[in-house]
Image (cartoon, rainbow, N blue to C red):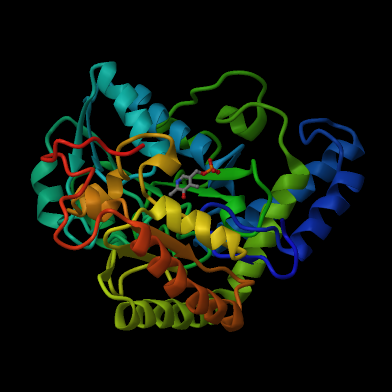
Length: 411
Ligand SMILES: *Cc1c(COP(=O)(O)O)cnc(C)c1O
């Protein structure tokens, strides 16, 4: 699949590994095989690699190295944060505040907690995907123990007002968790300045290996400093100071650290370069393709995220047709995501089902060139045109999947 002509514009789903990261991981697979908990030299070597990796990763977000806890994924980091805080604080209160646009790795743990007697407020968002800070203020009660709001949205790229949210959390003495998987390494993050207590990140969204993530837990670096407001949800050996037992994936983590090092070096330059390409795509499509629109915020969005809506057709078909042209993209349309409902994010920003069904997410990366973007823009109008010609959903025709219609959705 990955030949030189294949154009990969789905970097929000996962990224290809940077060759320098692959080199680093292979080196450590060969050399750093010890268990970081072992007393012998091989173990100590693994321990040294872990320590160095922790330092590098912590420095990206102005954290203390001892506040970085490695996990097997972003999903696992989210689950530890959510269930760990809920479990530790259930005497204090059972109310949690989150949003309607979270990733499933946050949304579904909260649905589980609801079943277990927790009260979860899902804050709505505006047409751009932004929460309202007054809503947040008003939602806080005496028994609120946790605010969990994503840093940047994985579908529409909207960046939430994290610093303001952190200030509100601090003022009300509520723990603040942010799922920063999409933002980490792409926009500046400062956990101290932004009053973030817990932050989830994942290596594979950042040109690192899959199956490696981390949870930042503000504890001023003290051993078990986190014990005040979060407790483990897995029990086993003593790895990661008992917060996440299981033999540590040292080569993967060394690759994560390498990925962070590269991201840090290139953050400003890449953000500027990708923002330019992003804006080029948005402007070109809106100017040149009839009945198209932008989803998400025009400016307060990730540098690499484009999410467009095309009326009268389905995102799933656009993705498949673009793939035949050798271009990888994604959609929040129902059928591709194995459920019949359109994306909860697109619904939350107020799109009608027929508008949400025609969404196309294009996410750029470090390896995306302007030439590739131009090729995509060259191929897109033909794809849209062809699909619209075949579509029964033309202007003035009642949508097949309109809930008010008698006709069933054709899938
Ligand atoms: C990808 C993603 C996750 C899940 O991370 P994994 O490492 O794949 O488990 C969580 N949150 C957001 C916002 C994501 O984009």
